[in-house]
Image (cartoon, rainbow, N blue to C red; front, side):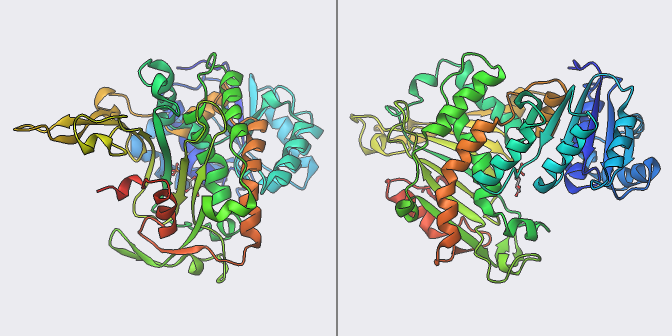
Length: 486
Ligand code: BG6
């Protein structure tokens, strides 16, 4: 659906990795699908290319490869690159921003400034834009990581907030743009079936896992100063948790949804520094084997300090202090170089209070909802059924909802959805400042403890599911990670 009425999309970091892999391919897909208005322009801003021809050469060499998977079309590509302008800009030179302003003059519609740059450049870029009056009639998109902790994130938000109003600021968390995450909202709030059971009386525990097979992929330097807690938990995992646990919003408008997510984040039980070893496990991968190939230890990756204590794995127990969720553990887990690439949410329901059908009906996890977010999207509702034949023997069966069998249309990629939302002024899938602060506030005691701890992260072999301590944490609650069943 094309609803914007002209826009100028200004891409800072125009030759960066994110622009190459995600942003430009997503814009191409939106163009190919007829979702961008004819008047929409894309202005790439970078230092490397000398001029527009140089930039288009760079695009032809580097970006095409990332758009081909859904059917690359040369004619469509040619029309797409007609939308592109290029401004060579040195961030340190104020006259270059005058040049940018001049280049934008006469373009119709809203201006979107996408900062696909490191966070240290957010404030200087915003200030330079304001100095030439480009903060008016515009939106600004900030990529994660937004800061390093609550203080640095506040410093960025304060400075950006002096220049742009909150309604102009789009903080991206690409997990919110994923189709299955949208589907979670549809499942919860479009059906009467689940909502009555979605609470402490019926739910025993919830697991949220984002597991990756990939390692640090040439980002060793960045990652070693970041770690899994900042890279994945503070943002993606806590956003997923807030969507799983939020109250039904009054409407899907941006503030109704974000208000409810914020309530969850603020209700997270603060973690006492003395309890961290009981509710948090940090790990770091050693060498191992993934899909038959040897992979090196984290500490030997380029850019990583040999004695690094940065975590590549985190497992946490979170609790939400409200009537709906009191006492229900939420187990969160993420890691690099794990046994599989999987993102999923597992809702374990309580067993029946009394079983006339023997022990299986009393077994934890016999009723369970598994929401698979990636690599493919499905929802499975596990329950017990009678095994055919004599006697009453129960066996686990599942109702299966595989979305690719129901819907012919391919999924829209997260960045495409989010970029269209920015262009069209829809804020619901972007993180509001107060949500971000609440998330930082919750993870900070763990960050602080790990920063000063003399205990190194627990080792795990690449290609496994992380340190044994992550399983032990669940065992204390009489449960286990989904893949450990049977
Ligand atoms: C990014 C992290 O935000 O998310 C990366 O910085 C991680 O380290 C990536 O690999 C995972 O995203 P996805 O969509 O591939 O699950």
